[in-house]
Image (cartoon, rainbow, N blue to C red; front, side, top):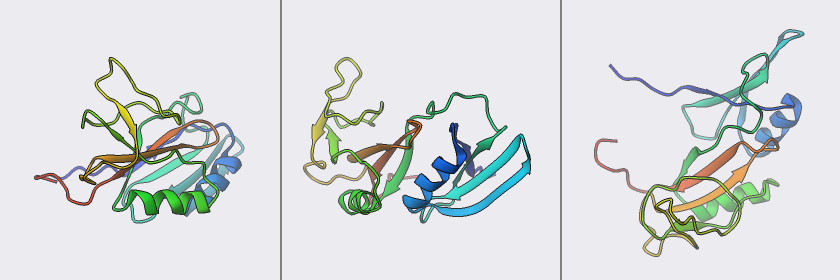
Length: 157
């Protein structure tokens, strides 16, 4: 039986500010509803994605900004970054992991993460290897997103 990730509850402090940010970033608004005074939801979908995000009031007790490592997969990292920047989103420069391992962690600086099995180096992967180039951004609450360039999927995907 297939199991597909469909929805992620995102912890935010101000649903109107978050909605404006994600719409500016190009996410499609699927639903905005005030169910009661204490239960309000906003549901958005990234361009081309089958999975969505939802946030609002009365949805989660997680602290705003605590979601990290949310991956958006793109086929051209530089073009995706440029589109977000053109939409007013502050995005890190493109980088790659010198150790060639899955990028983990989230920060906007050009930092080498010693002892964590990664080495963050400026620029896209030298061979533009699939799964090898990244850029990061955060929403107004600090929820952390990673753009990852994938041009050819690993076997079994």
